[in-house]
Image (cartoon, rainbow, N blue to C red; front, side, top):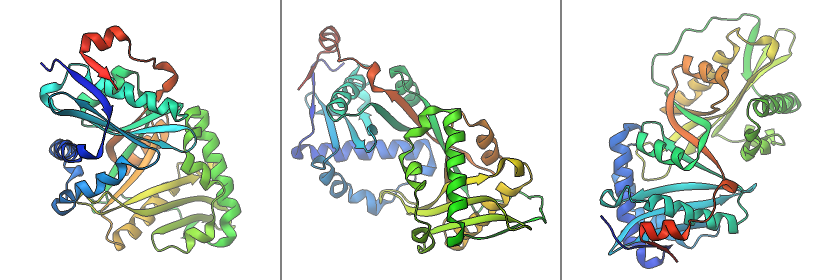
Length: 336
């Protein structure tokens, strides 16, 4: 048992210890789920990746210090008043002693000082211990990130001869923006927290010219014989952190089909057309984020072969008080 621990902001001289703990964390995730496969070259440059974050505005790392550094937590402030916990790790010999909870408490005090109201974090679906840890702190399900290997056998979709697909054009911007508003209204009706999808809210004023002019983006529309737009899908290709084996992944930004045209295979055709583009570009994996409360979309994508990958959990920062002096004394932890 570790008897004396202090929690403080990380310093430049902690970089070697932080790099070692990050490597252990990354190896743990790779062993847990091969979809977190690591790149050995990128892993060797971990210190170069971490060093700028110690001084980056809007980022904070706290460490638990005993005879050596026993654990760390890193968070960042995201626009629109919410914070994100990037990573947390405690050495196995120091676990189940409350260190993780106090690391989180220290980060949350910093979040509060930074004007953060809501905290989110990603947790691997197969990491049952971490899921239990965060839920024990009061985190709740928000949305899930689903994973699909585009090389897998494609489902057979029923052809709808009255609908055809084509690349989006500038003239489609108004219709697509209207669909985006309808999609956001539907999501917020299911879960009001969806209002904090800042990236999605920005897309409500998106510049279609920008999307159509990029090689890493694809926007497709579904159109009726009467040239009425009945749905669309938008996807892009994003680079992953250099420590991971897969350097690029496909991300589905939006998909929407007008309510009166649903359950006719249009959404499936839109996705499979986008998947073909990913395949042609050599992208092996597609990801999509779906609200946990959106059971219809969950069934739709899992019917296409998507699987649970990562959960995004939500925490209302107003629920957290400062760690009590009694708890600090019981844990033997000092907060600097």
